[in-house]
Length: 235
Ligand code: ATP
Image 1 (cartoon, rainbow, N blue to C red):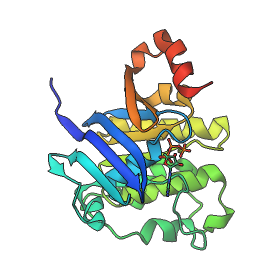
Image 2: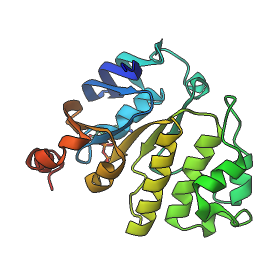
Image 3: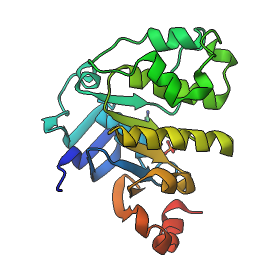
Image 4: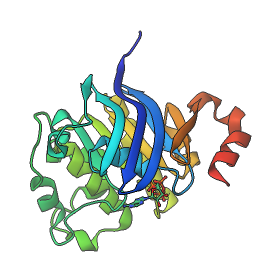
């Protein structure tokens, strides 16, 4: 079956003030795929995500989500189309407890996960409803941040380095959750530095260097491309 792209980014250029950061990013994500953006620090991965969400000063080119052009659209309208963004700095309410974090966010679109479904996806959060955000571990905070976005009804999720700073056992739990989301038909675009983790969940990998996508490697060809990968990631 031929699946059309859910998200299509074509010749995307982005600027922070005078600073030209993305120089023509091209990529696509099909419905139900898990796709990663890999690359060194400063390659432009976060800026690509921020550009999709409309939170970069100026951008040109095309970003189409389900056929709709996002460039020029008011940033507050973009999540309502069903795209959710979990930034690297997570974005939970630290002074609120887990339950409050899960019930407070505005439902921007019908069909968001229920709190019960969230607890099934992230068993670690179950029973922690009255625990305050500041008392959660880094992994639990990451899970809560993803959960908040799932509550909004987003069907495409952008995750910026969800595994950063987390212990291997927690990274594995996040991997399990992402695989479950894929089984349920969610579409995921993931920024990662940890390509070993990326290889356990992704269908394809885009390599970024200096504001460009320079290569695309299907996951089943990753092992055969290790040398290339090491060059791109500088590891
Ligand atoms: P990292 O893993 O470090 O976040 P990245 O691949 O996500 O790396 P970006 O954060 O997108 O890279 O940064 C791309 C370039 O844009 C870098 O050179 C960075 O210094 C620059 N940059 C990022 N944010 C800003 C900003 N707010 N103002 C000016 N330049 C910025």
